[in-house]
Image 1 (cartoon, rainbow, N blue to C red):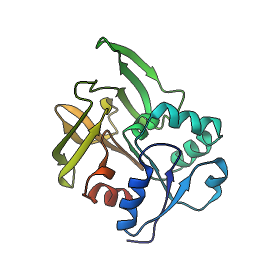
Image 2 (image 1 turned 90 degrees about the vertical axis):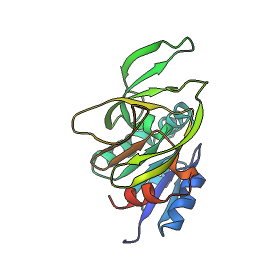
Image 3 (image 1 turned 180 degrees about the horizontal axis):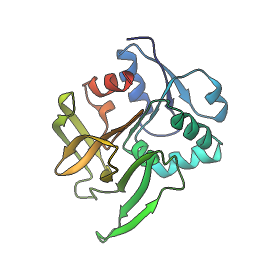
Length: 199
């Protein structure tokens, strides 16, 4: 595998854990904290788990959103986990406290480069966090840690579904974009990060 330099959004969330996984695979990382960091050389991007609204606001307020959106559109590989998946999704719906679903809305606020609908707060409080092992396309069984996770309720026809857990889509690929509902950086398996580096 050729040397990789991965930009990791480092404003909030589990970015250090992603960096540790990438280091095990021999990839260098660049922390992205402000607009000037986008001038540093990196050839792919990770959007970590955390709080999607906070991350999105930071990207917007620091003037990073449009540049990253364009680089993704131009073909830069991107990997969004949990909150990062929400930032990538073109459409978002949400579960209210009473269990009702807010109507699907176009994601005009964040990156909106991945043609899927993602349900925020999909598992609610009762199943806020859980761990499982499930099949992942091309990788076999992989461990999955879900923390107040979203899942994908609808994927456009050109999107490849990579994993389904309890009838819910939890991982997809669309060209240069990889999105998962869970936190692979919190488990020991390197296989999903290795897949991303192969894009």
